[in-house]
Amino acid sequence: MDPLSALRDFTIRGELDKIVQVGDEFRFGNDYSFPCTAETAYRSKQGNLYTLETLVNYIKNHHLKHVEYIQNSRTLKIPSVTFPDRKPLVDYLHGTISSHDAIEFPKTSIPADVEEYRPDDPNLLVPKDDEFGAAAAGPAKDEDPSLDYITMIRALERPLKDRESLLVCRNRDFYSVLMASTRREEERQRVESQQRKDGSAAKNRLLLEEDGGGGGFDSTPKPKMHLIKGGKIGEGVPIILVPSAFQTLITIYNVKEFLEDGIFVPTDVKVKAGAAKPDCVTVQKKFSRDRVVAAYEVRDKPSALKAEDWDRVVAVFVLGKEWQFKDWPFKDHVEIFNRIIGFYMRFEDDSVESAKTVKQWNVKIISISKNKRHQDRAAALEVWDRLEEFMRARSH
Image 1 (cartoon, rainbow, N blue to C red):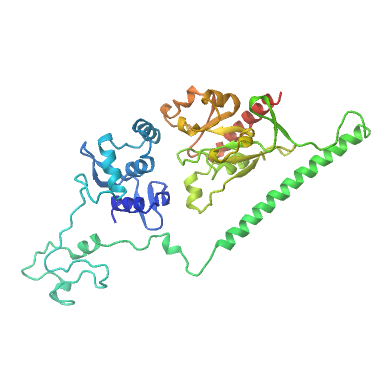
Image 2: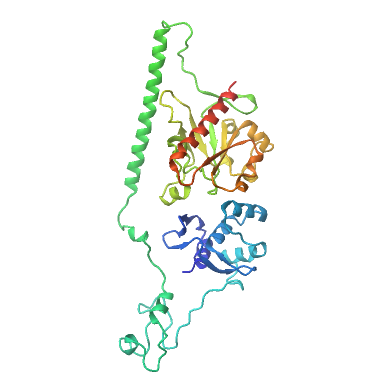
C-alpha cells in the first residue's frame, strides 16, 4: 500500500495514534512502515508532492489555526501544507471525498494476456495461455521481451507481515511478564521509601537524645504543608502539570525517568514499547540520599482538577502555546507564572524560533542534548533546584 492510502485508511479508522515515528520512518501499527521523507501521491498547488511527514504532522494538527500550524511546522522543521490545500486534503484523508485532482497515483499497466489481480484468487497473476508452459518459461517469439511479469506482480503485492509482526507469538501472553516486572519495581520503590522513613526516624531519635528528651524539639508528626496561590496554606501532595501533546519533550510517559533517574526517554519510544498511559505519576527526588524529600504528583489533564486541586499545583511544563492554559482558573499567563513555576524543555540545537514565545513568559528554559544522554542528569537537577528554590520562597 502506498503512504497516502495508508494514511487515509488510518485516519478514517480513527487510528492516527498508532502512527508512530521511529528513527527516520513512520510505523503504521504493525501493518506498514515508510520513510518519513517519502513522497506521497498528493501534489500541492505549488507543484511539489507532499512528503509523508508533512501530511502526518498536518492531519494530527489540522484543528490548529493556520498561523499556529505554520509555527508548529517550523518548530519541528517539517514543510507545511499550504492554506489552499488544507480543506481538500482534510476532506480526502477523512473520507469525505473519494478522490481529488491533486492526487496522482502511479499507474501500473497490465498486458492483455495477464489476468487482473483478485485478492480472493490464490493464483493471483496467472498467464492465460499456458499455466506452466511457454509463458512461465519466458516470452514467446511474438511477445514483447521488455515485459517483466515479476516486476508487475511485485507492484501489486501487499505486505501481510513486517519484521515486527513476525515476532508475534500466537497463544503466548507476555502480560504476566510485564506485570511481574512492574510488581518488582513497585516493591523496590516501597523498600527505598521505607528505608528513607527509617533513616528519618533514626535522626529524630538521635536529636531527642542529644536534646535530653525535652526542650526545643517537637517530635509530634505534622502533615506536610505547602504554600499555594493567594497566600493560603493547603495540605496534600503538590502537583506538577505536563502537556498531553506529544510535541513536547516531557510528558506523563517519561517524566518519572527524567526527574527521578535523570534519564530522558523520548515519548514515542515509551509508547512503542507498549507503555500504558497513567492518569497520575508520583515522583521523588532520588539524587539526595542524605535526607527525606517530598513527593510530587504529575498529571496531564488540567480539566480534571477540582478547585481544591488547583491549590496544590506548584509547577507546569509548558508546550509554548497559549491554548495550553485554556480554562485555567487564572486571568492570563502572567498571573499563572507568578503563582506557579514554569519549565520549558528544548533540545539545545533547536532553532531560536522554537522558544520565541516562551522567552516572553516568566518560565525557566531547560536544554538537553538530542544524543548525549549523560547530560540529562544535570538538566533534571536544574529542574529540581529551581523547583525547591521556588517552594522555599513561597513558604515564607
